[in-house]
Image (cartoon, rainbow, N blue to C red; front, top):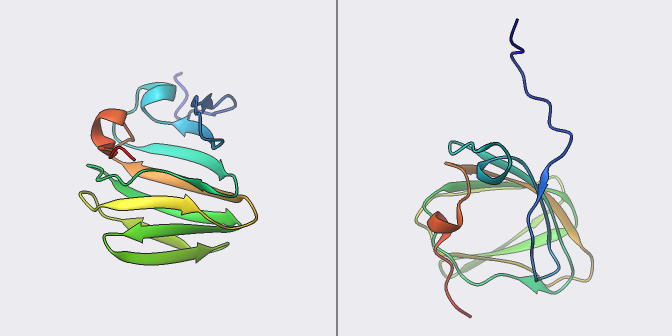
Amino acid sequence: MKKKYTLQKSPFIVPTTDGKLIEEHFGNATDKNTQVSIAHMVASPGWSEPFQTPEFDEYTYIIKGKKQFTIEEEIVILEAGQSIKIEKNTRIQYANPFEEECEYLAICLPAFSIDLVHRETM
């Protein structure tokens, strides 16, 4: 009988050059799932990404620390225990300008893809 669940013990570690840890548990890189991606992330102090306008909804839950979101022109800061949904086609920048690392979960619908994120050059 086929199992009706998938246990993830070896997430895909996304190679980065900005000091951020990305462990994709389910998604394009891990199991070719294009519907949803779930990733555990740790952003070091001072980390930031360029602005982007993704073609997916992104849900973020903060486990530890704080994370800054620049959504269009508004700055929103989330702390541990808080979550946010950013709707697709929204211009956003993610950053951790704080003194402690930020640990969080990110869920993208449909799944994260570099072809769908539309990052701007810094």
